[in-house]
Image (cartoon, rainbow, N blue to C red):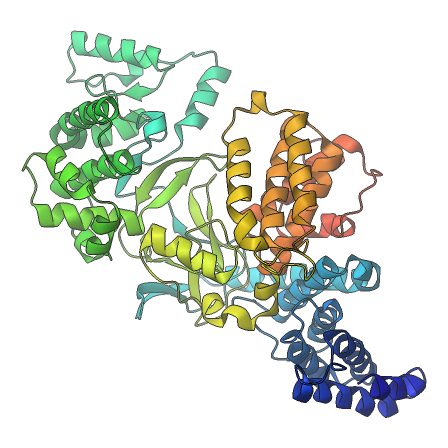
Length: 616
């Protein structure tokens, strides 16, 4: 191999066409003799293939160049130059078939490969900087063009289709990014979390009540209580309700069970009859059961309160014949698997309802909620409850993908597209946030949490995608079981930091996390998913400590990995860009930053529609 490479090198500079055959012979020699001949090393393959890629690109043979890059990445998943060439070829010839699972358009493909190149080999950043900016410019232009065409017509852009995974949503027009495709403002039923006493969100519309509390506090609690009284409520009940609202800081709550709250008079009026007839007494029973479970240390699933609460509101919706109530029976439930995994939740729920509902219905509803309910979050992304959505074009029809093209907008309570979606493409969301995990771990997480084995295109492609392999690659000089050894250590350490009160976060936390990251990088590549996990926690700590310089670098390092993994305006990307812009505002536009994406921050903000902070 070395001899062939040296022959190619002798004419590489002036005659790339003459040099190319020597390099290609070296690549073929490696493929035929690897593992049999000690001279056929991955290092020699990388050198010969790298020069061959340069020759092909200089000769304008983009199809052969991209094909060779893809071929060599199967042998060396972290071959940065091969990724760079894939990106350049995608820009030079958008018709090339370089698509991988959920990759989007040619411009999105180019950006992803170029980002992979500079993550794997930061020294390449300067040489591909113009290519990255070109990809971003094209994506911005693409978004404007597709959006304009989409707005010119009022024709439906979606349809419900049946497939091997049940019903799904399919595009029948080309849809731009940031288009609203489903509303989350009218749930059939709402489930509450125990830590909020069931009052983290409105039980009727699911609006986060944290936002309401903030508004009330900003107005010094100046609330028109008289406007809240129902005409058929006697003075004594009204007084009791007002006392309760005052105790809750102005929230509209039920004085009987103290387990539901409303965001407005309209929601209270709409829901109060259903609550009084089918929910209130059962809510009180749930409270008594939880007291007994906690006092007697009874074995109950961690999610019992959440599921029991949501069962109460869902059954109440069925009995009240809310719109589309008969659709509950048609939703996928995986009831047997759910009941087995969460045992003894079946008997506990049956005990809660005291024979008032038939066991088959209760079992089906438990499964439906576990597999179909969508988390409701506040503006910061904190989960405050769950919502079940029914009806045509509703959120429950959106299947999971580990390469989603849609996402939940927690602030405006809707599902939006994250990239250009082509005709015939299924619209999907992610049921889990750990999309940067390798295939096996994602599938385990989905199987345990949602009771299905993910067969999305990204999972089906699996290790065929080079970067999927790179996400869990250990250094050859590190310990052999590095990933298995450090996974629980990282999860425990990062979780311990995230659950603490922000007032308790100190510089020591940042130091300990940096020490952990340093230790990890003795055994793992810097783009390993566990390194990303620690960086994510560090970004949180730096933000709390107001260490803007470190926060800026950490956020952009995280953003780079997300660009390597998935295309489009994912909420996590927008959050990282927003934080980075805030840091730049605090530090000044001339602040030094070595992060690879720092030169492209303005373009990324424009592409993903992230607003600059005020006064910037």
